[in-house]
Image 1 (cartoon, one colour):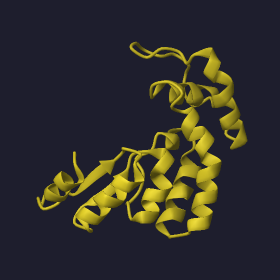
Image 2 (image 1 turned 120 degrees about the vertical axis):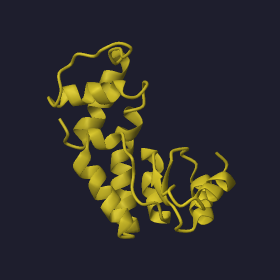
Image 3 (image 1 turned 90 degrees about the vertical axis):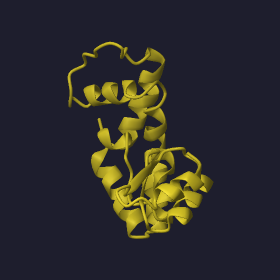
Image 4 (image 1 turned 120 degrees about the horizontal axis):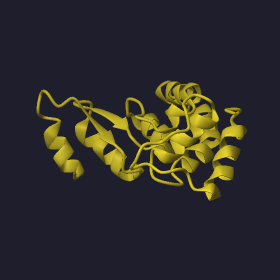
Length: 149
């Protein structure tokens, strides 16, 4: 939807929020400005969530939080508190994991990571397939860098 369309939707009483998942911070800023507090804006893109929350989004609908819930909660809390330096530092630490979780279609890497963490079994149902072996090492490295394995 165009930001202008979102602005018109914000005028409808029972539409209270929108997930902004484009990854485009310029668009995110435009949506935040257009809705001007009439509608909650939620980030839906982990790689831009910190910046979007710092700009005024409420929180993040996160993929990374499935694998690193405590760290993603901390990131959101810091951003909501306006702690820019700390937010960006933690965001930089989380970025390799967020990127690795999209090496293949979501939720394949998330399921693989959760299985590696011992949080779920390793069985997948179709149409999901196993994570390609070429991605095992990058995802394992990202998990280890955050002490998640």
